[in-house]
Length: 452
Image (cartoon, rainbow, N blue to C red; front, top):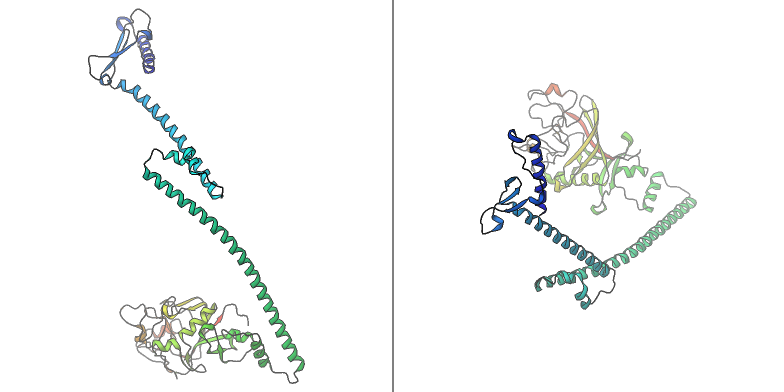
């Protein structure tokens, strides 16, 4: 009926508008005598029909009759159904909210260790039970099983939390105990060393030389040099062969130390001086090293890896040709990987006078190759086999310090010692021209933080 009154008001407004726009013989509609009142409005089916909801309806307004579509009667019914549905949804929301709040309270009660209500109380007033009363037994069993598992998890969490607190307390005690033990051990060793040194200084009549004093100090303090820089710090300033241990798990080995040039502390990796040693060697030879540390030699890829792994190293390369021209290349970062990674080279940070060897071919991040092991970037051949040496070839090279030692200039294949940025290499670009040769070559490393 609300819709009827609304429609009545609308139609009266339309009628008044029509009346204002025109009346009498010239108007669209004529006003009928008598007042316009909603009491005269009639809404009734038009004609006979079996189903009233599918009948066309008509509304009568004196003196105007308007035919309405047959779905008009369904509108009020639909509004009533929507209102009922809205009330049902609100009731469901209230029930779900109440269920969630009570379930949270129950979980909190279980986690806190408070005694839970018995089954009778739950059956009388438990929200979870009320929610699933209308379900089948299978659903109730699943819910109960899940509640049991949640209770077990809660108990396990509480036990784990207690164990963690206990372990944390024990760990703090152990850390404090270990720290105190370490401090006591260090203090005792310092006292023993100090007393021994004082006793030797007061009793000796013929004091040992500086070298013997440093060796004695090294023995007393159990210092093991990891490279030539450690030996230099101990006071040794003479070139020669020394024993180093960069990694105690791999034992000691001999190295040649340059203690005189450029601040000293250099561990020599490679040296070429007269061609007495062939560098056309196998993978196994380059792996373990070859030659004489006092003459020409290659220290060995395994040893180079251990030295560069122990500390951050810089690389210095010294070059001298047969005309007496000297140059050097220094790299602030130098590292060689292990054999599993084919002794991959990492080198960067160039400075010097000889030029950067990676101008044309980049040797950085390249694998080591030998005449019998091809790890280079050349797709249709082996750089190591072609040039007869081991090196970090690209495809193939802009430098090769392990090439054949030529005492005079040579022609043909450039398989000699090569540095691609040497000052006069442009004059021997073509294979028919003479190739550049080098008299002395040396590769050596030293830690970045070394202070002469």
